[in-house]
Amino acid sequence: MRRKLALLFIGCCSYVASAQLGGESTYQFLNLVSSPRQAALGGKVLTNVDYDVTQALYNPATINVEMDNQLALNYTSHLGAVSYGTAAYAYTYDRRTKTLHAGITYVNYGEFDGYDEDGNETGTFTGSESALSVGYATRIGYSDFYVGANLKFITSTLEQYSSLGAAVDLGMIYIDDKLNFNAALVIRNFGTQITTYAGQNEPLPFEIDLGFSQKLENVPIRWHVTLENLQEWPIAVSNPARVESDLEGNQTEEDVTFVQNVFRHTILGAELFPDSGFNIRIGYSFRRGEELRIVDERNFSGLSAGIGIKMNRMRFSYTYAKYSSAASSSYFGINIDLQ
Image (cartoon, rainbow, N blue to C red):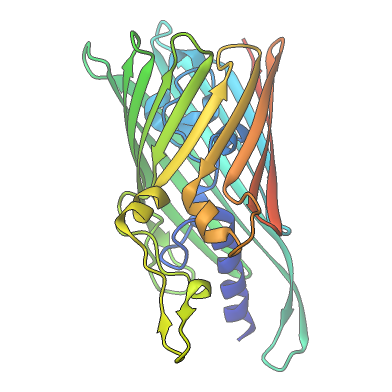
């Protein structure tokens, strides 16, 4: 009984941390925000093609020669005792024409007190998960399209249970240098469990995302629009807290419209001074803002903001993301040019 409760509790932590479609798959940490820059722009950005070596953790098609010898380290103080981090590195070889990318994502759920079915203490237990990825991208002929893939090896330990898995991310990006416009499509976490926790095979958090971005010609701003979780429609459900009752006691559930469903898939972001040594970033996730806000209370759920500062060979990033009136997260990152 204690072990079942432990798994249930840790599973709930994983769901809250990832803000994904909870309860439907395992390894939810695979869709965590990978860096402060990502977090500041709303949580999911697919189209940054530059030095940002962490971007390839989410879209392998963005792997490029500018990432050569770039090392990124990111840490997040998340909800409750949950903390996680990512690291990424890229190396260009073969006359500086081909780039290989490697990355790792790690989450620690902290320490929990264990109890048996009678309420007696049974000691403490922990939970952690990690994923190691290797990625590569290539151009399609002489076109403006690039494709890439990440191969991921996954490990998970929850109390005394453990599991191994493998998955692939597939990405495609279109880059128009004349218009400074990028468009990307990513299929994430296509894979399976190799070994299960307790004999029952569970699906991975499969996800399809579509992203667009453009740097404006006369204004130092790059805007971003991401459409997330396109594999599931509709994504919104009625909120029980918004049930309306008439004088006769009849209850009417919230009516979620088509337009509301469209917005639940949408993330907006903007980066001011994207090519300079100092950046200001802001983003908004409609789904997170709508699902985590308290009814009839303004608490800025879904909003995130951050900055980036370049100092010699290092770039520092910080982001603050608001989830609800009781929960928020801080993201810290450093990108080091090792050349």
